[in-house]
Amino acid sequence: MLKTIATYFFILFASILATCVLIESLLRYTAWLDQLNNPQPSYIPAYLYEQYQEVDKDGYVDLFGFRTTFATNNLIETLKQTDGCRVVVLGDSFVWGSGLSVQQSWPSQLQKLTPCTVFPFGKPGWSSYQYLNLYQTHLRELEFDYLIIGIVANDPHPLGKLDTLNFSPELYQRHSVKLINHNGQRQYLDSLTFDDYINSVLGGFAESSKSSQGSMDRPPIISWGYYNWRKRLYESDVYTAWENALVKTVESAKHPTCLLLTPTSNSADEIAIFDQIETTLANHGLNYLNMMPKLDALFESSIRPRDAWANPADGHPGTKQTALYAKGASELLLACD
Image (cartoon, rainbow, N blue to C red; front, side, top):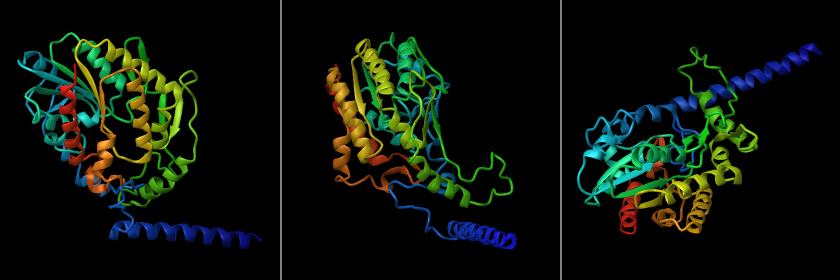
């Protein structure tokens, strides 16, 4: 009996080892598993991140992390000292230009379409609460002509301070499933890639079936994987808090304010997200432009292809989208009053 059990365990171990060796060989010596043409990949190989890690390192980054095409140590002070028409753009990584050369970001391309000077106040990872707080605390009393707010799908993330609100990072959490977990100790496996592949593909599959937990009244809110994390933002408790904060700030703004809705892709879930946001903004009578219909038309109602990404390792909007968004922003400025 013990011999039979031992045989079964040996066969199981040998099968797992053989599978890992096969996956490692395919990842190391071929591109069969790299999903290079997949518009919604479950795995992005590490060599792509390494290959494109310097793409968005050009331009100038001021003391506060704002990225521009022109030299400045303090973008707020430069705004104060600039004469003529001035446009302030608020947002996150889309405004910052993640994955792209600084000249390719949509605020930089907007600069070419308007006689006004464009000031991009965006940072990767920022929520609406964080960039609206910048406006309230540092920009609201300054003189400039227009305020454009770039809205993206993960903006309702309850993170940061705004007026009386103060959301800690622990309130809204994203967890991941790791089937192979080294607890940070993988010095003997640094040259291997199969574990990243298994965690990305199988871990992502496992995450998709896990439900979110918690609420704004009963924190923390815990979601599994990015898509569940983003989906949870649009349930009533989280979304209503964001809606109230956004509308209050826009309606009390001291500058002509308009909102540009800038999707990452034209996937079915993002179409639903931006339909919901558009309905909200329309109900409140805010000045906005939803770029989703034009984005969907750009890709002829097919899912955004991989070559339209910022780069093969970064799913942020690529140059086709940023050019489209810059044109939309220039049109929006004409109605921004």
